[in-house]
Length: 125
Image (cartoon, rainbow, N blue to C red; front, side, top):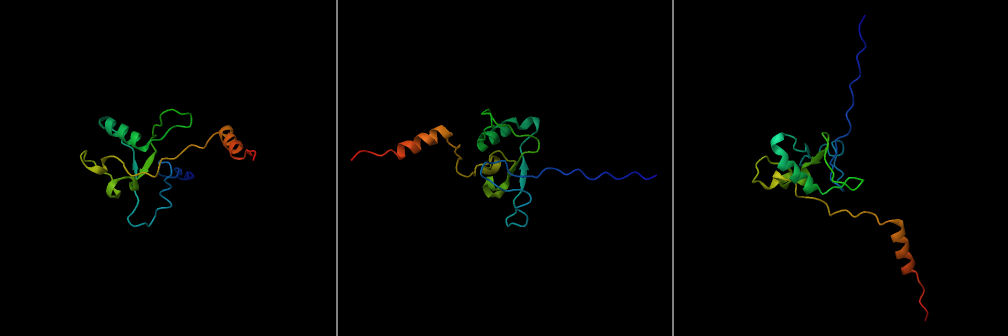
């Protein structure tokens, strides 16, 4: 009796981890120049480079701790000089340097309410 073939396991979507960047493997197909998605350095001898990439991305975990990339985390080529990463440590594309403006966290509701109240206070004439 033939065994039923198991369906291939789908992998999650590959997308850029940079806050404000919406590039993914799906939405960048056919672009010129092509957008590549790179893994973060993971070799034992690339610890300094990994830390430099983490610092460059400037991301924070939801609980406020330092963000660390996982095995599946990617960064797109648009964040590297020349749209391509380099393995030469003296090259400007060794570390990602091109990023959207720094994002701001949404103000807490109380802070927003206070600004609203101050703005709408009617002054006596």
